[in-house]
Image 1: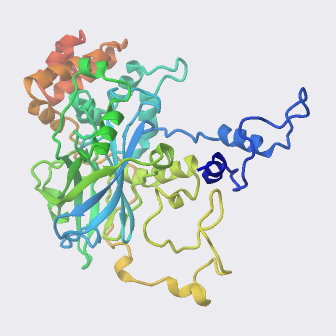
Image 2: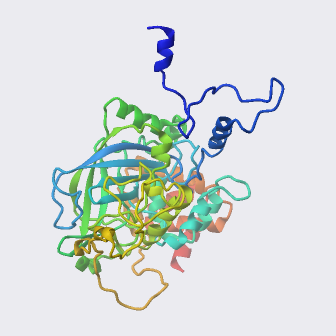
Image 3: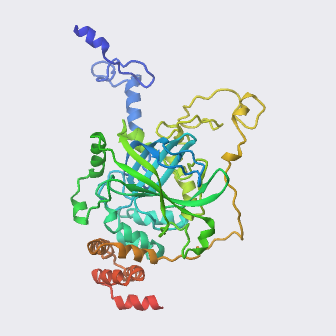
Amino acid sequence: MTGQAVAETRPTMTQDSGAPVGDNQNSKTAGAFGGVLLEDFHLIEKLARFDRERIPERVVHARGIGAHGEFVASRDFSEFTKASLFEEGKTTPVFVRFSTVIHPKGSPEALRDPRGFAVKFYTDEGNWDLVGNNLPVFFIRDAIKFPDMVHSLKPSPVRNVQDPNRFFDFFSHIPESTHMLTLVYSDLGTPASLREMDGHGVHALRLVNAGGETVFAKFKWTSLQGVRTLNAQEAAAAEFNYATRDLYENITAGNFPKWELSAQILRPEDIAELDFNPFDATKIWPGIEEIKLGTMTLNRVPDNFFQATELSAFAPGVMVPGIEASPDRLLQGRLFSYADTQRYRIGGNYQSLPINAPKVEVRNHTQDGKMSFVPQSGEINFQPSRAQNDNVFVDDNSKRQSRYPLEGLTQQLAIKKPQPFKQAGEAYRAFTPEQQGNLISNLAGDLGQVVNQEVREIMVGHFYAADSDFGERLAKAVDVDIERVRQARLQ
């Protein structure tokens, strides 16, 4: 083959418009010594696009990594939900985004932090986003505290460094955080890999079956690779991108990671028997059976990191028929805030981007705005209408949201049965002696930096209320008088 023939078969570089680029190495100038011409449209377009390559970073969950896969249902779940993905043997495509929560996009992956575990199911009735973490609970139970919590955990607005003095000042006012702090300061806060950690939906969700009957559920992903963690020394020595490298290398090698999805079911009539509020995101549901629902396998690395991992957008309000929100106050706030942050970050049409778009046809009259590239035609962009397109809207009771009774007056009060310490103590006692020692060391490493003695005593008091051994060991590690803590607890 001649050199000319080879050149003709090469793909032609083009501008965004599709027009061929004649020279991608030299700008167009006014002669040999003149300025660069504004009319060099390819140059201007190339620089303008480069200037706009970054979109706003997520406020939380900024450092992420994603992978494609599939979920295969292992049993029929129609007794509890009409959601179509839970039919025995049915396969549903998924995209999963793992992340750290507080630390920024360019941070080391081994830093202590909860790990986000967000799964987008592309079902045949639209998308379902199961948004959760590797830990089963959260720091707070009401979304009104979320901005303050994140502000305290983020770097100081003056010095731009993360500071335990700031976030323990906040948590000293939030006793319900004791459970989550116990878990995140354990070695669970530094997973050995993304493949070797469990995932939790954290929130209770309402399930509705075809007959309109309602139960509540908590979902959990159990790693079939097992759970493995790093201690503080191992985490400090971990390679900067260790989690991304491990996940992608294993998928590329055909060692596809798998998780088993299960659900706990709580019937409305059983709620009163619990000694805690089941819609409190700082609580697990101990003693309730986990029903196995199927297996998720991650089997493909995205072709482009930005278009998949960065543009993927999750929101707990993205649900399918048969899955609805519960009264969980943290969830209720997230129903708004997650979708709102995606509209700010990416744009109002974020759900039409390929990574977010459902596999089913979207039919509504939402239109225009930034990145409105889904084809639209016809004059009817409203409903109801007697024109020809009105028949695409079907009044189907099976697709309506469920009905449930409401009672009482509007209120702005804390929940009943707050019980901030019991489950934290149970978590501490479930750890091995080595794990308990690591927890004390990890926690003391940050709490010991707190200058305000009152904050240190209050925090030790929270852990002492969870378990006396926990509190006594921590008091010794951070130089707090345990007798003062005991007396404060008695007042």
